Length: 134
Image 1 (cartoon, rainbow, N blue to C red):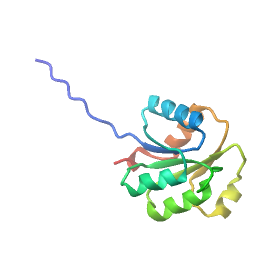
Image 2 (cartoon, rainbow, N blue to C red; image 1 turned 45 degrees about the vertical axis):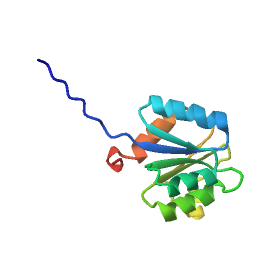
Image 3 (cartoon, rainbow, N blue to C red; image 1 turned 180 degrees about the vertical axis):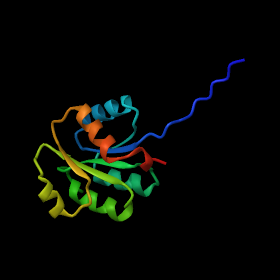
């Protein structure tokens, strides 16, 4: 008798926070196809609610320009509430590394829109090691 044991490999848990529904959903589908566990939030308030409800994620991909809680404010709040979560900011508006450092939000990087899924996946795999996943 042949017995096959499937071992689950750790998967990076991603929270996508973007008020553009089509962009958020398309990115979520793409990341799921690349074996990421994905949760979505339509804005900063929804992301905070997820965080307070005990949702578990390793990295948050946060749009910079959103109504209500913008991306910089959300990154600061995540850093306070969940210092273990890595934040990647994204926007059609360019943000230099120096501006990112001056913003002091604890983000691990900025990925300008538009981007190709493979570029974002490579960035996530480089910046969020599998060991970060529980």
